[in-house]
Structure formats: structure tokens, C-alpha cells
Amino acid sequence: MNKLFLKFAMLPAPFWRSLGADTDQLSAILDMRLMIDNRRPIGFGRRQTQKKEIKHGTITSTILFTFMGAFYSLPLFVVPDRVISLALYFTIIFLMLTLSLITDFSNALFDNKDKYTLFPRPIDDRTLVLAKLLHIFIYLMRMVIPTSFAAWCLLTYQDGWTSTLVFPIAITLLTFMSLFVVNGVYLIILKLTTAERFKDIISYFQVIASVVFFAIVYLRPRNINIDVNALDPARYRWVQFVPSYWLASFWKWLGHPTLLGGGVVTTLCGLLVPVFCIVALVRWLAPEFTRKIAGIDGAEVSMPITARGKKAKQNRLYLKLATLFNRSDAAKAGFMLAWLQTSRSRTFRMRVYPSMAFIPIYFIYLLTQNGSSIAEAFSALHGSRKYLLLLYMSSYVLINGLSYMLMSDQYKAAWVFYSSPVDPPGKVMIGAFKALCVKLFLPFFIAITIFILYIWGISVVPDILLAMINVLVLAICMARISMRQLPFSSMEHMKQSGGRVVRSLLTMLIPGVLGFAHYLSMEIWWLKLTLAFLSVALLWFIWESYATTTWANVRKEEM
Image (cartoon, rainbow, N blue to C red; front, side):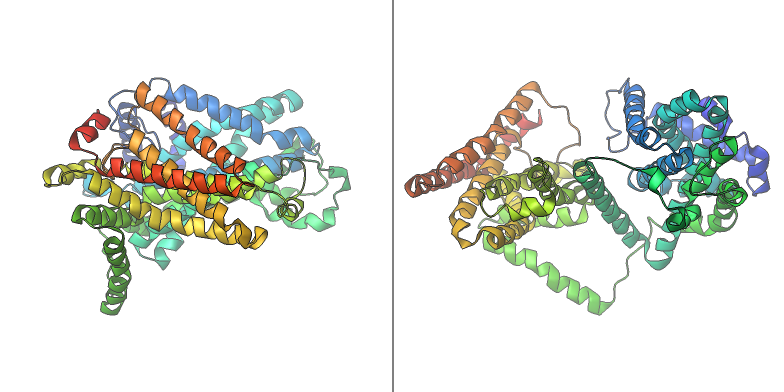
């Protein structure tokens, strides 16, 4: 398959040569990279250190992308105007490609290992950048081909062989345009900021993108009812300036009239703009882009003395909090380690911070399941007890943060725990747990509390306090049963044993039991008080058990 993609990428070899690239070197670099990928399959978000090979990963991803493509093809079913429906479809695919480039392919795009292997060779910048772009283009096509398969079959069935030939050309041009947009935006950001700051910007964008996707899935309009015949072409002339409409205008020449017009100009834009994007990217942007990539690892963040002083004062906060919430030195060390590492680890931020936005989005989704609008659902909140649902849903933030606090790409650095005279290691673990509660859970819970007090008033304060205790009971119980490991000491995606999975599933019953008991005690004050005492006692008992975790417990959990 890779050989086929390589031949496809090298078909316009005269065009690559006209851009200043050495086609022999280009073909050799692409062949080498695809060969390495075969020996060490790329799996974005999956550790490559796994010894067990995933045999059917490509087939699984292909099936997944095919089903996704069938969903993306919805405009082709509901919009009778062929050009407008294809413009909507190409817009969806363009957004999907662009976000995939930013979220999944950023590491591949900015892989600067080339500066150790290829930069010392007599290879010019244009060849290097074009090889990188074509390499990513091949992986994009592996995603685009199954994603667009449903639309391709539908167009072939409805329009015949003409759409069969034109559709792959339009998809290929769309892919090149998405490559240009992402690279252009990256270069602009690199011009305005430092290389280290650039990494933070990309990670923040990835967090925002995941939240937006989650919101689109759960808060999307329930019904898609587009009356194309009622469209006023005069109000939508701006659509002719959208790149996806340029590609859709190809179908006007295949006998599909459209209400929004378009003709020779839009068709030429659809053909020439992607070509211009490739030329501009390789001929003019390539040298500077390569220099920026070369310096991205070695970029040292220089900070003025005054800025360093302000930063040092801000960093003293975690030192004060570590002393305030911990007695032993081991617990203080675990607190400070977790506090600093959760700030520095981009992987942790990308996986945990979005969960804070998932909770309110999913809460709104549940409120509107009866068919009411968001405004109607919020107006009816005051007379309900749905604040309990929101309070107990906040446990997801703490549990998600706790699970990812155990994992790290640099898990081998955990040797320092075993070389230190710390006994028991539970002191370090309980310190890290406190840091996660203070830094991550407490601010989120306070924000939820402010919202609840605004809607339901001060009378629900006892329920808020009881729910907070129960959430802590749930989190410490899960940590005690299935997460007795040192912070940032585990390899990602470790194989879960059957007993551990069963323990985790049984632990998930705890929030339901606690929430149901809390709900039953709503109108009986003495029952609520009794439940509060029992929850505090259970919290203290499990807390002490977790804090006294021994090295034998840690090794057993690792095994």
C-alpha cells in the first residue's frame, strides 16, 4: 500500500522539480519514512513502546473513518441542490482535515529529528519541506479515502461516471488547501511568538478543539430542515468566496444548476488556488519554516530578571500550600511534584482540562432531553433537585485527573522514587492526591457551587457540603482500590488485568449508591446528618489506608 501511495505522490514529479525540489532525494526520503512507519506503525495518541503489535489497527481505523464519512455525507441526502450540498460537504471535510492536522499531526509536522539526520546532508529546504508535507499528505489520504468513500459511492450512483472522475480531484485539491492553511497559520504564530510558547498555543488549541467537537455532538440541532428553494441568492453572495464552494462549482459544468450561481471564476479559483498554495508553501515559505523547525527544540526561553522575579513569587504559592496541607516531608514532596508536573505536562492538560467543559455541556444535554430549549430548561431548574446531578457529575473531573496523573511519557524518570528512602510511599501518593484536589477539583467545584447558589439559593448549602464529601470518598476509594501507584510513574495504555477492570467497574457503583442515599435523605434532616457522619468516617478510614500504602502494594499494582 505504501508503494502505491509513494507512486501517487511522485506522479507530478515534473511539477515538484519546477518548484526547486530534487525528485530523486524526495522519493528516497519518502520511501525511507514510509519504511520506518511500516516497522514502527504510527498511532497518534498511542505509545510506540508497546511490544505487542496491533495487527488489525489499519482495518479498524478504516472502518471507523468509513462510518464517519457516511455521517458527513448527510448534506448530500437532505439538500437537493447538488452544488450547495457539496459545498456543505467539502466544508465539513475541510474542517475535519484542518483540526486533524492541528490535533493529531502537529508532532509529525514539527518532528525535528531531521536536523540530526537530513540537515547535515546536501538537501535543500524545499525538498525537506515538500517531503514532510507529502509524508503527512499520504497519511491524510489514508484518512480521507475511507471518509469520502460513502459520498463517492453516492455521487457515482446519482450522477454517473462524471462525478466518479471529478470527485477525487476535488478531494485532493481540498487536502492541499488544508495543508497550506495549517502551515501558514503555524508560520504566522512562529513569527509572533517563541518556539516554546508555540507548543503551549498548539496544546491550548487542541483542548479548545476537543471541547468544540464534544459540544457539537451533544448540543447540535435536533432537526436539519433546509429549504433550498426558499434561499435568497442575493443574501448569500459571500458563499462564492469560500474555497469549498469553488470546488463544488465543478459540478455546475456537469449539468447541475445552482441557486447561488458561480461560473468560470469560481471554477478557476478551485483549480488554481490549491496549486498556488503549494507553490507559495514550497518556494517561499519553506526556507523560513525549516529554520523555525530546526530551532524549536533548542529554543531557550529567555526571561528578564524582573519577569523571573514575578514568576518566582507566583511559584511560592504551591510551596505555601504544600506546607499548609501536609505534615510530612514526603507528602510535601508529592504535593509539589504533582502541582508542578500537572502544569508542565502538555499531555495532562490536553486530556484533563477538557473534562471541566464536558460536565456543563453534558448537563445541558441532559436538561434538554425532553425536547425543551436551553432557556426553558434553565427556567425550570429552580423547582427541581437537578443540582445533585451536577454536583456528583463533578467527580468525573477528579477521577479523570487522578487516572492521568499516574501516566507519563517519561515514566522511566520514576526511578527517583525507588532510590529515595521513603517509607511508606503512600505519603507521596496522598500528597499528590491533595495537590490534584486543591489545584484541579476545588476551583471547579467552587464554580459549580456559585452557579447552584445563584439558581437554588443558600438553602442547598448542606447538600453541597455533603456532595463534596461523597465525591472525595469516591475519588479516594478508586485511588485505594485500583490506582495505588506513584504519580507519573506508569506507562500509558498499560494492559489492564481482568481483576483490575472488575475492581474499577465495581468502584463506579459508588457514586450511584452515594447519590441515591443523598437523594433519599433530602427531606429528612437527621438522615442527612447521619449520612454525613458516615461519609466523613468512610473518608477518613480510606484516606488513612491509602496514605499507608507500602512498597509491596505498589509493586503488586504494577504487576
